[in-house]
Length: 424
Image (cartoon, rainbow, N blue to C red):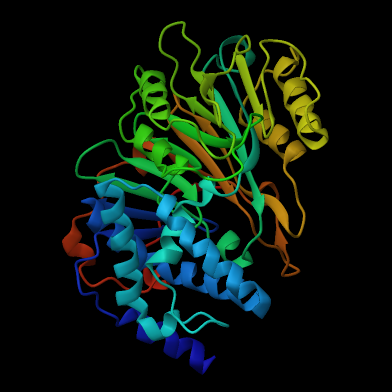
């Protein structure tokens, strides 16, 4: 207990080298991390406020690696030559590293089993993750007569291998308020700049899913990580331009090493469907067809108009079928309760693979609901859809952040203010 109290006191008195333009709003089950300013300033605040969780997750990962794996780790670190970043992305990632280093010191960043501290190469590789291993999950969008109020509702689980239990249970809602561009929010493990599950201040959502197309045998040229492409989409998109921006940004990717579905959902404008799904794989970019007032994506499967799902992979087929049945049931118009029930029916819950987080969004109503995986009463990690749901209004989430002067000497996350959010 004394050591724990001492650690809190030491963290609370740490003063950053730069102003920390960020804060943490803590609900009962979700940390909302706000950062603002230039890319470098947002990155520094991100690293300063929650970089310790990235370091602890890396230590947890390296502690489990047998010595025979260290050579493979060194080889994987060379893959960063294939990760292409813009100047803004470079500046933000450099800021994240500086923030965590200034907060913790390099001695505290020493990794077990190797003779070095965590460094910028580790951080860069983490942020290029989607180029080297695919991501799986399930989700759907419904609108018009299929929803209880006629407005768009979209949902998703993010299903992933549990590389580090600490990373899983310390996920955050990262809200970026840039000096230029649209504000964005991502449900994410810490120190991940790109977007797997995101929404912007205009209500445009972006979701990444494992695809069904051809893959490359190896990365053949440098690429922008797809998660960063999705962040770039959100930083530009409005309800009326979301699909044009997405098509342009994804076409710029060119053929991609892994196969993905990218689902872009926005507030409905006119009679146009509010959701589109894009395929990106070794053959380049294509657009999937859409259903009548609903759109479904699971890993390896996406909608074929209004047809029942086609058999592609056992687990994916079952998840698709369950979501399809929810979307076509005329007796049950979809509202948030129905959406959560559908997600719970498809969310995996295994020790090594589970739903890391899940969201239900009502873009036109300005509402985001989030749950993240956590620890249950028995101390075991459990899937996100068994955890409490936090409801946030988009207007509140994207309100202009506090001035930098209020956090010039940032304190421990344990001492940061509590947001007054609707939690249930």
